Each structure stands twice: as C-alpha cells, then as structure tokens.
Amino acid sequence: MDPITRSQSRRRLATLLLLAGSAASQAQSPPDLSRQIAEIMSQGPSGKAHARFIHAKGIVCRGSFQSASEAASISRAPHFSGGSVPITLRFSDGAPDVSVSDSSPDAAPRGIAIRFGGGRGTDIMAISHNGFVVGTPEEFLELQKAIAATDSSKLHPWPIEAFLESNSKARKFVQDPKPVPVSFATESFYSNNALVFVNRKGEKQAGRYQIVPLNGSDYLDDATAKTKAPSFLFEEIARRLAAAPAKFRLLLQLAAPGDVTNDGSIVWPDSRQVVELGILTITAVVPDSAAAERKLAFDPTRLVDGIELSDDPLPALRSRVYAYSVAGRLSKKTEGAR
Picture 1: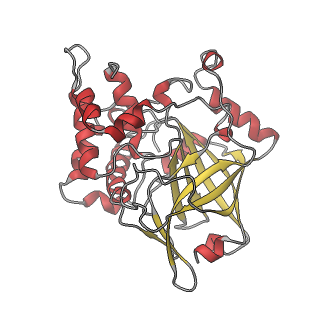
Picture 2: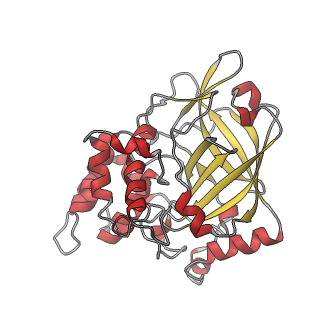
C-alpha cells in the first residue's frame, strides 16, 4: 500500500461519520465508545475550532420534496403520503477542516444532509461513496485511534497503514476513485446505513437511500479539477440555484433475503430492486448560510412513524458522537459551526 500522509489519513478517514448533529439530551450518555471516539475526533482541526468534527465546510439550501406514487406502498411516513413538503439541506466537503479546497482528495467523500418538513421532521444523511468505511463501532474506534497515533515523521508502517492493511473494506474505501463533481448538483450520494420502512399494512422492508441527480452525475477530469478555485463548488451551486432549481431523485434500494443490514460497509448488488420515492427540488441557498449552519443539527436517528432503525449499530453511535460535536460547537460560536 502506498504511504498515506498523516494529513491525508486524518482528513479522508475522519469524514466517515458524515454530518454532525443530535439532540442535546443525548450528550449525557455514559462513557462508552461514542465518548472515546468523540474525544479523539475533537482533537482534529475542526474539533479544536469548535466546529463540526467532520464535514466542516458546508452550505445550507432550501427546497421541497414531492413524493412519488410508489412511496406510500413502502412507508406510511407523512412525507411519502403525497403532496409537497419543505426541505432544508446542507452540502459539504468531507474534511474536518473549513479551509479544505473543494478539488482536494481530502474533500471526499462529500456529504448531503436533508431535513424533511417543519417541526421535528426526519433527516437523511448521506455521502458520495457507496459503502461506509467500517461496519462496527469497535472498528471505527480502532480507525480513529490509528489516525491519531500516526506520525508522518516516524518510520513506516504507520498505525493507519497497519489498520488499513488489516481491514480490507476500509482499505477499499480509501483506495476507491473519488472524482471531483462538476457541481454539488451533479454528485450522487448514498446513505449506506439500512433503515426499516413500514407501510400502512404494517409490512416492513429494509432499504438504503440513494440520492441521484435527475440529469445524471457529472465529474471533472483530473486536469480540470486542479484548475478550480478552492471554493468553486460553493460558488457554483449559488450561481446555479440563482438561475434554476437543481433536482435529485430520492431512491430506495431494497434489501433481498440474506442481504446484510447491520454492516454499512457491505454494498448490496446493483441487481437489487430500487424504488422511486420522489423528487428533491433545491431552489436557493438560504440568505445567511453560516447562521443556518449554527442552528442545524442533523441526526441519523431523527425518524418519523413509518421509518425505523434497523440492526445497523452505526446510526445510534453517530447520533451520540454528534451530540458531543454539538456540545463543543455550542461552547464557542464560530463562523464554521453547525
């Protein structure tokens, strides 16, 4: 395996919990894996700055969701029952650093977080890589320990290299191509963690969200990406939305009998049935994105009737870790905090 610098390792691999956010009450959980992980991640660039542990650089937009007719057969969730509901969403680069360049490898995987409706609503959190880096909380803790213990001034193999050598799924995550999109609006996103969808008959079906541009994904070649300004994706999405809405298809890939639902690092085959849940229409960047970020706390366990957690342990872990991130952000208001 090619040597990976400490900076690259921390930025690429610390992006794995996706977007921070949780209810403040969850911050009172006892010392456990989530606290250990949060303590390590809080020593990263954005944690020290009291910003999001990861996906620190972002932009908040607004729009609406129109459910497809097939959605109600999958889930009795209110936003799948027909009609249009408002959405608030945040695009982000994956690095734990607000100064990351959009075209840097450290910016991948990029993220999207979506909240449906007013009040409590429900959240979707997804990244631009199909498959999570690890499958268990214990593996994620070991990953964070390896990142923190890596010192690029020391001889190889570094702790992060040893971890990747021993974990084939994490190694694949790091080595997979991560092209730079033309726009946030031309990137595809995957939730990776399975949820359980319940319809009005009480029938249950496990599935994973996919968020795909209505007109297809589009990426830059390496040479062009290198010419782009550090915040070109953020500048581009603002110009794009000022001219016309951006649209995504919200899809649900359904698990087949025997498919693993408790390990988000295992990708289901493309042959699995995919259901059209509806269209996400993004209309504008909110007037003060920085202020909106400070108020937003997305949470993968924020669900509504008709959507339930599966046996995947990572959403609950992420929710607790995000609570620590929120507590850190509230302790010192910063320009980059959520």
